[in-house]
Amino acid sequence: MSHARQFSVEISPLQGDQGRARLQQVITGLQAMGPEFVSVTYGAGGATEQASLAALEQVQAAGAVGVPHLSAIGMTRASVRSLLAHYRTLGVRRLVILRGDAPSGQRGTGDFLFASDLVRFIRAECGARLHLDVAAFPECHPQARNSDEDLRHFKAKVEAGADSAITQYFFNPDAYADFIERCAATGITIPIVPGIMPIGSFSRLVGFSEARGIEIPRWISMRMAAYGDDKASIRALGIELAVRLCERLLALGAPGLHFFSLNDDARVAEIWRSLNLPHSAAGTSTAAAKLA
Image (cartoon, helix red, strand yellow):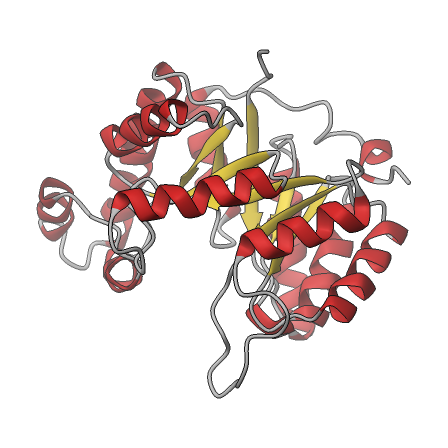
């Protein structure tokens, strides 16, 4: 069965009056592109719960389809039930389920050790009412001992009830192609949408990638190094590289693209325009965002 390609974006909550005002600008800029949905990050253990809920409501008020992230670590069955009830009142129809990491200083892991545990619980609580996305790792989760173990964990999430997946970002399209082939060989057929991280600050990206086991190809590092502190040139190259990666992934048959915006709507919009991506009917309909 074929599925329409899905083009979506991610934002992170900002706190304080100035932060919320800035986030409103970001949401407005992203919504003008007509994404299928706008996902909102959520700190493990509920670390950003109130800010995430406020950001979700901002997304919906703008007429976009808001999709909350929900992290397993640190959550209890009671806290998840409470959130699910609140999401229902907001008309949420989709969630992104992650394992997450325990906040610094937090003891215990709550009632869910893995993302698959949380997927299974939500599916039992909500049936087919919610569409559940999970994470996938084309270059392996940084804590996996090998690629086979990583694939087993991913398959556990699928078997627990995941409808589709969004990958961690990567820069090597061959890693994605290999991962898709290996998933198919084990009977995994859900759509696996590649996550795209446009390069803005290269120094920040290096530190972030090292902590997550993501390979930055040497040729990209060398091209970035040639620009030194020239932020405009680094930004332009980052956009160029993202467009080329997206074109390759779509040619490989990727079922869509999910952009990690880092709250930079202008950069994502430029990539979106360069790729001539469609405006989603769901993303441009206020009614769709408010379905009960």
